[in-house]
Image: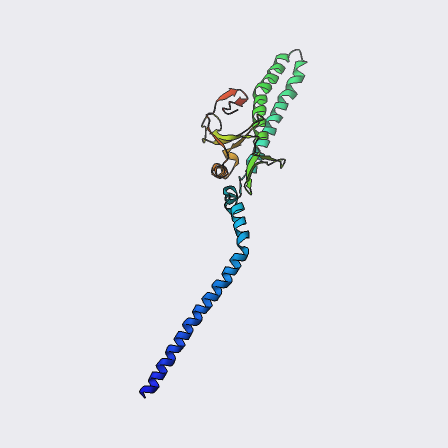
Length: 236
């Protein structure tokens, strides 16, 4: 009886020992296969790493996310309608004023109507027309390339060697309703493009996205009048 128990214990020990050595053999086999695979692709892996992954600019592009500023088209259309309304009002003053000039008794009236139309509506048409037709761009960042997209004509301006940098300023010199901000983009050819806050639903995300792309920030500039039709630009 004792001999039978000893044989059973010895058999159990042999099975456990066999299972242990089989596991060791399996691990050794897998390690050998993996080592052979790494040796065969080692030179390619090193070349890829040092050419691409180790390159800081490429690594930045890999983890970079695309961004597009959300242009509020209804506000742009509203500005266009206001511009058309001003042009219509100005046309009425001219329509009623010019015939009065030929009338001997209504000459002064005609001069007055035309003068009011030129001074009031003419000025508003120039200022609103200039801002409406020039403030039509959006920031677009695709695959690490930053551009300004023309929302009307679909053209793109690349922020490359012809780009000086951008600044932030107030939109207008009075805080009538809300202190709107504007981003001003400067180009070496003298072109300036403004992105006013009220035209973009994600305006607060534009500057951080530009910072991620290392776009040159010129700083803050106060709003100052240059003349009746334009503001002063500090970084021209």
